[in-house]
Amino acid sequence: MTLVNEDDARAFCVTLTDSAGMARLERLATMVAEENARQNLIAKASESSIWLRHLADSAQLLRHVPRETGPWLDLGTGAGFPGLVVAAARIDLEVVLVESRKKRVDWLIRAAGELGLPKCRVVGKRLEHAESFAAGVISARAFAPLAKLLALSARFSTHETLWLLPKGRSAVQELASLPPHTARMFHVEHSVTDSEAGIVTGTGRPASA
Image (cartoon, rainbow, N blue to C red; front, side, top):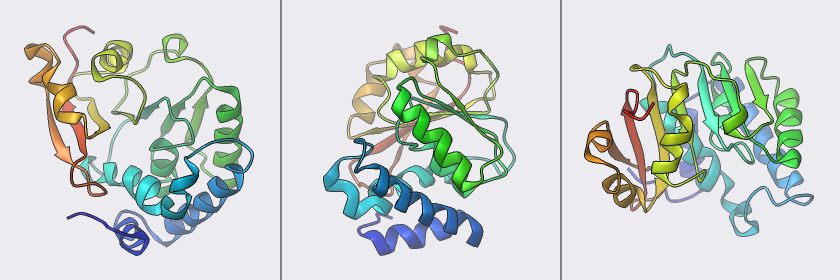
């Protein structure tokens, strides 16, 4: 399945949340567009396809997550993708957003407040300075090359941690670049928003942790 337009993307998101969650996602889409006039949250060219390029692209990670899971750690959240979308779609999940840029941190705090996300927490620090905890899920989109990402975040993982790392069209190449003992933890799932893009996913604790 590959989504091709905004209607497809909205319909896909409906399958991953309830009516209240869809209302929060609709509000988030509006808020991102409004904030984009003040700071560059997303590329201007992607504003007209925000559901496909950002909301559905983020929400698709929920398809790989058990209904009950421990804290979700989203690295380098930026404008809130995927972590803020996950928190809006699944208000029951504890989601921790790590972002170091002050303007983005202020935006995330404001957005989480306006959307009414009591279990969404923003950590306004570089990942290296964030306090360790055992994450049930670790996600990151456009945060760092895969090897560096794993090295920086391995201390948050356990043997049960689920990794969900959208890597676009470089997913297979980045996975192949890892040492074999680390690469065998992971595989690539196809993205529903781009037939040539992949999500590096796996469960466990990298050997370097």
